[in-house]
Amino acid sequence: MSNQQIIETTAGEIQNVLRQRGVHATAPIMVTITVDPRTELLMNARAEARPLVIAAGLSDDDIDALIKEARRKVAAETA
Image (cartoon, rainbow, N blue to C red; front, side, top):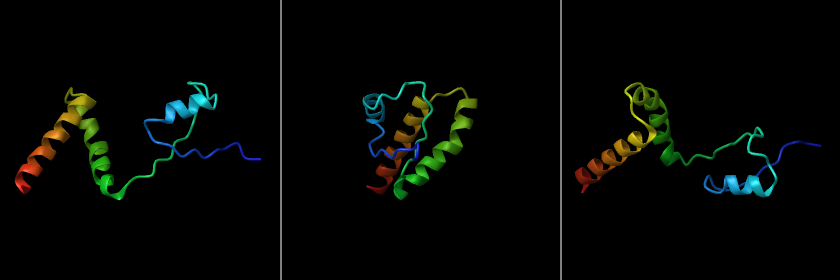
């Protein structure tokens, strides 16, 4: 008998699903993420940039703001 279960849900709902199944908040779990190939490049870039941004004294919110600004610039250039 396997001690693994496969649960398909969204990132926003995972906490609720685990709570409903009685999984304690400190219990170790393994999460596998299915990545849309269209967003994989952005995720990789963010992962590579994050240590540099943190070293510069910025936060995840700052990273999000920088990404949004870059998206606005690209959209303006392609419009």
